[in-house]
Every structure is written in structure tokens, then in C-alpha cells.
Image (cartoon, rainbow over all chains, first blue to last red):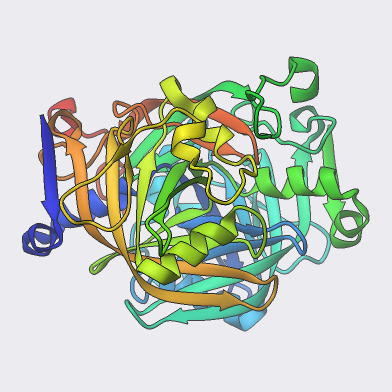
Amino acid sequence: MFQRFTDSDIQKLGKRYKTNLINSISGFKSLQLVGTLSENGEPNLAVFNSIFHLGANPPLIGMVIRPEGNDHSTLKNIIATEFYTLNNVTESFYKQAHQTSARYLSGESEFEKCNLNEHYVGDFKAPFVAQSSIKIGLALRQLLPVELNGTTIVIGEIQLIEIDDSLLAEDGFIDLSMAGSLTVAGLDAYYSTSPLSRLTYAKPGTEPQELPKIIQH
Amino acid sequence: MFQRFTDSDIQKLGKRYKTNLINSISGFKSLQLVGTLSENGEPNLAVFNSIFHLGANPPLIGMVIRPEGNDHSTLKNIIATEFYTLNNVTESFYKQAHQTSARYLSGESEFEKCNLNEHYVGDFKAPFVAQSSIKIGLALRQLLPVELNGTTIVIGEIQLIEIDDSLLAEDGFIDLSMAGSLTVAGLDAYYSTSPLSRLTYAKPGTEPQELPKIIQH
């Protein structure tokens, strides 16, 4: 049976119910560990899931940062150093990734506490996660404050990509399922994925076709 | 073997390769059909995947709209009517959802051309997709222009939710996998999902536990 929530129904919901409902309803989300360094060079790692593709040219990724909690250290570090990393999360360490959201004391490294390894590339000023199969280094380009709820949208430009050869298709596509990337719904629900197909560019009057596997890898 | 792309490597990539690479690297995305009405009441439906949770209180969802192509009609309609819908996409109609990205002529309805059915709820001024198992009605709250690449971030507040009872857990969580929601990577790659687990709230000094299934449903 269908359940309908109107805006006044939603306003009346308990805080926790509402948080779970609204966090899960927008659909599957990108799951990434965000690595930063403080001004003093202390590493920080935090799990994020409000990350979105903003554009390919220039290569931009957006990320929503809440005003309070662990997000705050990440934002402070990004503002101080102007660099950060995104690292995908796979089944073999998703519980460790989740654990980075615990409120560790200032000076405690989530890498150490959660048994994840720092990985540095050249002089890039932020730590990557050694365990991740897709590593992205970004430079801060813009902070967009959202007055409606006090969040900040951080926009970064991709400066560095490290990825296993075997995950890259001939046309540049990365098979995230083969990379073992998980997706997340709500605050705490983790999912693996299975590919259905890649579809051809849509044109009026024709039906989309499945791309041959050879183009997929 | 690991492949490394620096920023100058990325700049030199061919346009199509770069588009595929950058669109897929940010991780799995929310797949939604966006329903709108024009000023004259003509329905429009377009598939989007740069959709993100912005906050639960008030319940806000963000969506990136590119300056050109089909996105333009959606944005024009949202500005004109201030209302729009998000509708999840399942395996039984994902090819039809993909087909909505074909450039149909003005006056042609993607609902009709792609064999998807309009569904209206009360006097809500935008069409839902009858086939979708999770339907969300939104009111426009803010347009954030992104000067870095000419895109617009549309922020909407949830006004209406229609969902099958069986998908709602006791604590408000929606199991998107049970709902049949697909996720998308890049421009054209569709995936189904399988649940691993929901994890308990993370605290220092303890390991996250899997929530019992009874809380999951």
C-alpha cells in the first residue's frame, strides 16, 4: 500500500525518523573517504556521501559539508591547505571507513585509529588512502555557502588520479563495480553493485542499445 | 598496474575520453527522472544523475543542471512553475528512462515518446512517473549559479513523498535496493545493488556493528 507524506506530515516527523527518511530518499550516493592535512601537517580522514559530479571541463566535483561535527575539521583543513583527496571505499574496509565518522579527539588520526594507511603522491598536500582502488586529488576552487541550512558546498578541481589500468575502458569509462566501489543510502546502509549495461547515446526514433562488452573494458 | 593522470595529463585528454573518465570517477550517482510542466502545461521528463542530499531539516535536495541541451527545458519549467518531481528508476524501465535524454522536439512529451505514464497527485504542479516506486515532489527554494562552468545548482524542498509502505523501515530508512532503485556511473552505465549491511553509529573505541535485520525492515 502506498504511503503519502505531505510537507506538514514531514515537518511533524520525529528528528531521527526524518533524518533517516530524507537522507535515504534522494537515492544512492557516492561513498568517499576525504583525506586532508591540518596546517600543522596532521592527517585527517572522514567519510562523506554528499559528493556529486559538477562538470568534466574543467573537471569539477562538489561536496556538501555540514556546519558541525567531524565535517568541520575537514573544511578547516581544506581552507588552510586548499587540497584534499577522495578515495573510494570497497567491501574489504567499509566498516573501517564508517568508523572514521566517530568523534576522535583533536590530534588523533583516523588513519591510525581505523587501520587505514596513508599514501602520499609526490608533493601533493593531502593524504590518499592506500587501500582505495580509485584515488583522486583535488584543489579547492570555490566555497558556496548555502544559507538555507548553513551547509557549505566545496567545489574542487581534479589535479591527480591514480587508478588501476584494468579498471579503465578504452573510452575513458571507469567500471566502479569492477573497482569494488560501494554505494551508500541514508546515513549507514552500504551496498555493492552489479552492472546491468552501458547504453548507447539516446536519439529520437531509435531505442537505446547495450554497448558491446568490448567497449566496456 | 597503476595509471597516474596529473592535471596536465587530464587537460590533454580527448573530449570524449575526458567526459567519460571524469563523469565516472566521482562514484555512483543517484538516478532520477525529473518531471516538470511548462508554463502552458506541457509535461517534460528528463533523466538526471547529479542529484545530492543537501540536508534533512529542512528537507533539501540539490541537482546540477548544465547550461545547454535537454537540461534547459527542465530548468526553464522549474523557474516558471517552481515545482518539480524526482522519480526513481528501476530495472524494468531503465532503458526508457535513458531514452528521455534524446533531443525530442519542443511540444513532444518524453512521457509519450518513451512509454512512461504521467501520474498526478492532488494539485501538485508537476507530473510524477507512475512506474516509479519512490516519488518525491519538490518546491524550488534557490538557484545557485556556478560561475566556474556555467552550471546551475537547483535546490528544492521536499513537499510530497509517495512510497510503498513495505519499503519503509521502522526508523524511517528506505531500502533503495528493495525499492529496485538503480544507480548510475558515468553517462550511460546502469547498476543494480545488493545490501551489505546497515552499521551502528560510530563511536571512538568501539567497532561498528551490523544493525539487526529487524531494524532494517
